[in-house]
Amino acid sequence: MSSPLFQFELRPLDQIEPWGKPENPHLHWFGLTDGQYWIQAGEHKLFEYTSAVQASTRVSRFCDYQIVRLYEDVIELAPHALEPVPQVLQRYIALDESKPWNFYWTKWCQALEVEGTFDEVMKCIDDARPWIGRRTLDSGYLSPSTNIVIWSDENTVHLQWDNREKLLQNQKAWSAQFGSWQLSREDFMSEVHSFHDRLMKQMAERVSQIAAGGLKKKVHIDVAGLRREQLARSQPLASILIEPAHATDWSLVITAVQTLETSHG
Image 1: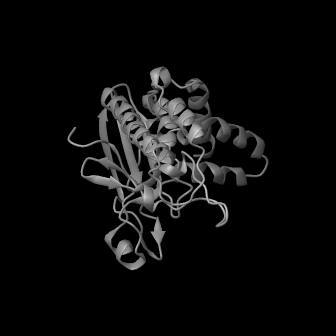
Image 2: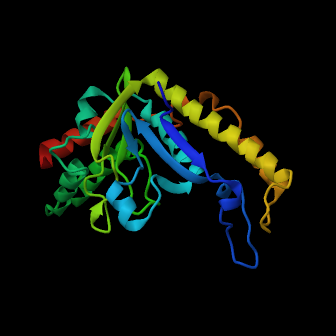
């Protein structure tokens, strides 16, 4: 691949705004990952604002946030994304341009309005929904957020997005409106490892810079604590990408989905 899937730029150290009150400014490892990030899905850049929004609001080109937030969400999602979705369920997570983002969720929830069926339907929804959420990249901390799902079949990881309804000041917020991109399972694992390695390498350099007195602002930083966290976070990902801590009970999911579709579809 010509460029990494998960891309980022750390903000220069002297441009990072400290946390806390003016009389007690401080920074920690999380805050020191401040910068911009995006996902390079082929020719599409996820988390890139549209030109119109950039011009009218003066936002940065890409998402302006702590890089580690995307990193942590990717690490949490990856084992689930690599757990193959059974073919019978793939249409419920694969995005369809003719349908809204939450089409099935909305349809199933409407069944709750049928008198006398609430408990039964709620149980089915509780069983049918979580596996999709675990494959949805969290961005609820952004306004507007993005709609991105990452899931796999036996051979391929599918990265899909639908941001058609995401607006910022009544304008389309994200340049990547609707689309999908695929890569092999092996390449996806390599990309996650690459993200980990690149972020940890750059943060190791940042921690060394701070320890050497490179932060000119009068900001409190626990250097010893910073070094400990850097060491802990830099450990190899090891088996974390092999399988999720709790494997999905696909038979339970399939039964719940089929019940919802048959009785309330």
